[in-house]
Figure 1 (spheres, rainbow, N blue to C red):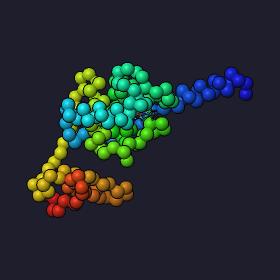
Figure 2 (figure 1 turned 90 degrees about the vertical axis):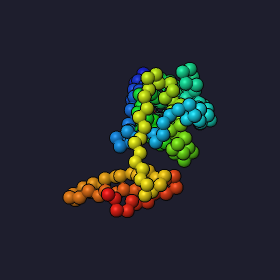
Figure 3 (figure 1 turned 45 degrees about the horizontal axis):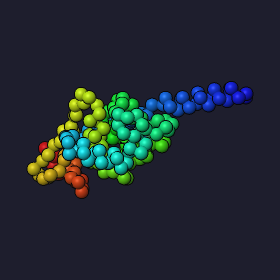
Figure 4 (figure 1 turned 90 degrees about the horizontal axis):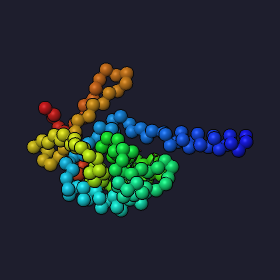
Length: 175
Ligand code: HEC
């Protein structure tokens, strides 16, 4: 191979890598924050951003992110903002390549606070908040319902749990 071919192949390879979409599993895309974003959550998010993200992503709106491949991007641009809240949550939690995984560093509330800060750079953003069911039988807990389909079996399992910050218990005799 001559030098031109090698360079061309290298460029093609880099472009393919750069163009590779970061696809978030479908069931994670619609994930929503359990609380409303407001000035307090945005302030908390800004602090977390300065500690954990600014070194690579730069100051939002300044375009001064690090020159990495693929590029981290400026949070004030569509590169980050095109993501749904659930997609940002997934990407920040799991990371990819040079983007670190934060799931063992930040709590999920921290990540939502970060997202509330990031969304302050999206004009016209309207937040959807998770609908939460509560029951007086389980004070303070959030009731979650999941349906489990077993392939090849004619049945659906319904699992109902009441969860709070510390634990999750099956709901007895769901009505
Ligand atoms: C060490 C550098 C680094 C740090 C620190 C970092 N990121 Fe990233 N980030 C990247 C890189 C590089 C990418 C592109 C990854 C890819 O596309 O494979 C990225 C991608 C992302 C994306 C996805 C963008 C897209 O294309 O959809 C989001 C969202 C994001 N970062 C948010 C954050 C947040 C929030 C923090 C702080 C909690 C953070 N990042 C910290 C380097 C970093």
